[in-house]
Length: 281
Length: 311
Image (cartoon, rainbow over all chains, first blue to last red):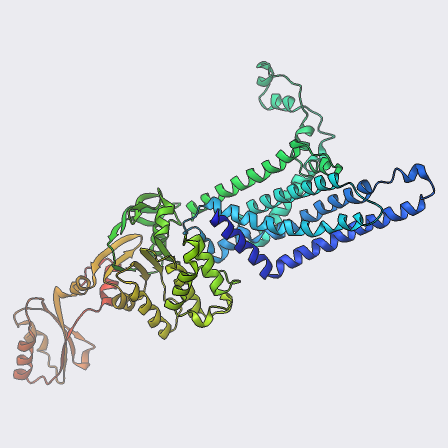
């Protein structure tokens, strides 16, 4: 644990002694702040407009109209910024030769990877931590958002960000080039984001497809042709779909497990790649 | 302290290291010598556990580097060819970081870092950014990170490459000061470095060990035959014949023609110099110069690399 923390701490120092952390956090705050302000302004003008129409006025809800879109825009900004945060993590170590220092020290590759992951996760926590001020600001006004759903939403974007970092770290382990790592991570994340978009048209069941590729053997074994459709399956893999319930304020273990699975799977694959690259020199 | 047996490393079809075996005992300074691309760096990377060997075993202080990597790595200090430095860190925090991941107990870290800074002469730059240091100081920081945890075994890959002569001298003195307490393996392609710092030499070529000897043994390789350089003021046509007639002389070669320079090769057990001088006087050649040619380590090295027996 001491080794993991030492590596994480060094990573954090590097972020904050270079302009990177300030640029990333600054851009994130500027964009998310602007978007939050825009929906807040819209909400307040609607409130003014319908102030004397109780039927409409009672339907205006600050959680739905301000807090929920805020998490959506944060997720989109993460999609663009997290590859920048993760691109140098392992790629840079390989390029400058410091990987040789880390992997000849009495520590395991798992500790190195976990340390780097936690270092980047710290930066994510800083970004999100500062944005806690947004809902706190409107707490002071008469439009009080519900605390529970807001916190659930924060948990959602935190988990989303953590899974993005794990994917970015995985891509960073595959190359020595930071640009390649960033573009690769961006592509992988966008793919995971959009993978569910064909869900509505992919109405064949998974079993039906399996029957096709096994030339009917599946059906002969009476494994059944019903069950979930291909679209359902793709939807379950989508990082954006799983955020929906968090934004609504619903805490469902299914989604928590999904994001944690992405994290564990990516970190595991990262460790395998780092080990196999040692064999190839 | 170090035992390497039958270590081979293949990259695809090419064997970077091919069945190397040697051992180093406590307190020795072993010079690892060979041309570029001979497999020095690969061998060192295998020893430090950075690269796993395709076959064979490497043990450090009794621990197999592959089976018990943590225990073995704890006892190794390693300076790779390119010092592995985080250029965006200050010297002292960097050393503190390395001390932590090298397993130095928390309460000892400050003392060890101070000691390494003092030994490597880093005090004037301890608060500076590593990226802004000169090559010589960067190399010292690299050396400092290797000795922080006071390892039993110190592995240095070309520690003096790219330094100026006075820096080279400082680094060599530093390495010499580690002898005794630490076992040192040092790779280089500069022969002078070996003669100045090491007590044993391992010459490696094309992934195989070409020679594993002490410096004395290596120097003695030149002793099987003797060669004498001769310069005469008035070399006549009969010179070669007359000298070859002297007992023990194997061959006489005229060098550069009119200059009157000859190289005489004799049996190693006989000294023909007196007889040659005598002949020069009786024939009136006008002996200007006569000196024994001893093979330099440089020549022996090149002979070994080219697979020839040193003559």
